Length: 320
Image 1: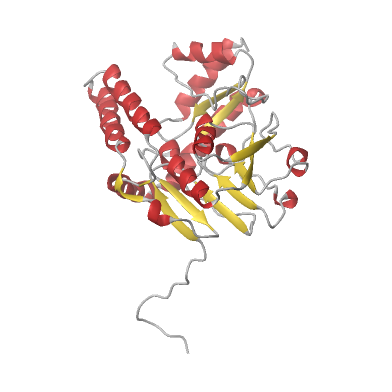
Image 2: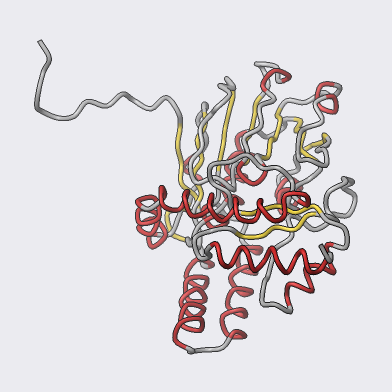
C-alpha cells in the first residue's frame, strides 16, 4: 500500500555541489583539487583562464577549435593529458565523449548556461557556470562535480566587487529610465568592479543579494528562454549567411563571423549598439577565430524590433 503524508522523500544527490561568486573562483576551486595534473585546453578561450592556470602553475597544452566552433578531435586524440577542459561555447553542448578515455577527468565550462548537467555521463566530471555573464546578477557560479572539492576553501563573506557592480547597475537603470546620473558615472563603477575582480585571488561565496535575485531570475526562466529564442530567430532570418550556427535552448548571443569585424563594431557604436567580442587575441595562442567573431546580445532587455534594427545596420554596413 502506498504511504501518503509525512515528510517528503528525496533521493540523495550523487553530485557534489558548490556556490562561488564567479567562474574564476570556481576554476580556482577545481584547480586546487587537480594539482599536478596535465591539462588539455582549447585554443579559443578567455585570457583569464590562462591567468588562473599560471597562478596555480598548471601544466597545459592546446587542442584546436575549428572555425565553426567544433572541436578538432584529432588534435585531442594525438596528445597526452590527464584533464580535458571543454568550453561549451555560447551554450551549445558539444558531444565528444566518443574520443574521451573514461579514466580522464573532464571539466565543462558552461559559463553561458544557467542550467547544466553531465549530459554525456563522463565518469570523472566537473562543470560550472557564471550567472554574471548570462543574467542580471552581479555575481554567482554553481559547480557540480562527480568528486568532492575542498568546499572549506570557499570564504563565507562575499567579495567586494558585487556591491560596486549592483550600485552601477542601479545607476544605469535610472540613467536609462529616469534621466538620472550620467553614463560616465556608472561606466566608471563597472570598471572599478572589474578591477576589484581582477585583483581578487580568493575563492568567495555568492553574495546574499545575488542569491535572492537568483530565485527571482530562475522563477522567470521559461519566459527568458522564449524571448531569447525569438530574438535569436529574428537575427537568424536576416543575418544567417554571416552567422556561426549555435544550437542552444538558452542563447545569450547571436554570433557573427565577418570580415572587417572591428570596423563593423565601430560602425555599430555610432548607432548606440555595443557588441562584445568573445574573445580578444591572446599573445602566444594561435587560432582562426579571434579576428572575425562579433556577439550580438539577445536577452530579454531587447525585443524583435531591436533585433531587426541591428540586422538592418549590419546589412547596411556590408551593403547587402
